[in-house]
Image 1: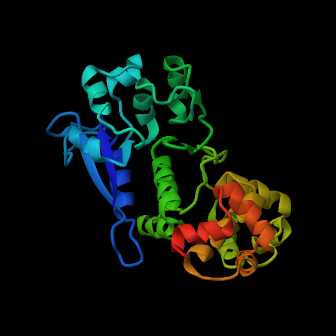
Image 2: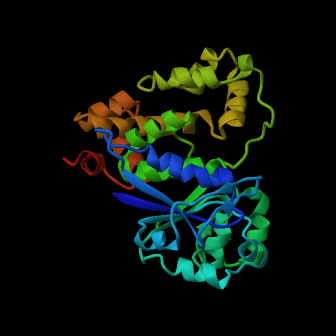
Image 3: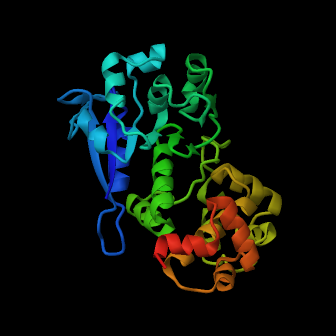
Amino acid sequence: MHRVAVLLLPPVVGFDAAIPPLLFSNATDADGNALYEVVTCALTPGPVAATTGFAVLPAAGPEALETADTVVIPGTRYPPARIDGVLAPEASEVLARIRRGTRLVSICTGAFVLAAAGLLDGRRATTHWKFADDMRRLHPQVLVDENVLFVDDGGVLTSAGLAAGIDLCLHIIRSDHGAQVANAVARYCVVPPWREGGQAQFIDRQVPAPDHFSTAATREWALEHLDEELTVHRLARHANMSARTFSRRFHEETGQSPGAWVRSRRVDRARELLESRDLPVDQVARLSGLGSGGNLRHHLRRGVGMSPSSYRKSYQGI
């Protein structure tokens, strides 16, 4: 079983600290067996102060890092890292316990800890948009991108602020075990199963439009008709809007154009079909709205770096 250790550095952002245990602990296989073992840990015994008036009692000490396959560092105001861009000796000693090759993940300002340890040097990374300039000032060698929800740089992954940690954890679960498992976790948590890492941290419209001006109902309808032609004009007609107004409001609500959103949903549907059903590639492409097997191969290779047959073998074991 994949072991996830969540390192709590005081004062920890309580919301961030709760995300990895909740999501990874609810990832199960088809028989209901847990796919991850999750443990929270800290530098020293006892409760870890949170930023918002409570404390978190970790289940283990720093020894948990020694056997972890993934280490997650939630957001924190840990002064050495946040103010001076360094780690106190006790934190450096603890991080040195992490085995080589362990996947490293930060949520929100947890990226400051990875950066202070020199683990983000020369890498593209993100953090909460409000603190991106602080990261640049303290760590000019880090390639900071505050315009995305998360960055997957192979063995090191970073997320933007707060709720973007949910998107990153779902992305990790999807990468490890496929879209079906990740979507089931998202449904349990009542959150969207897919917000791509490249989506902006915040969108233009700060106050949602009234429901009758929203594109939400049309998006729900589109998910049931992915195998049909879904042009902007057809989507706009369903929403009773002009194409121009629909496109503008769609982008305000999702951060994507209608075309990009539909394409991503179709690839996601194809992934689900490849994981769960033994259908010919051309039929998967047709049912997901991607048209041809060649088109499916193109989008799957671009999205996950695999052919349909390799993807199916990875998740079905056939």
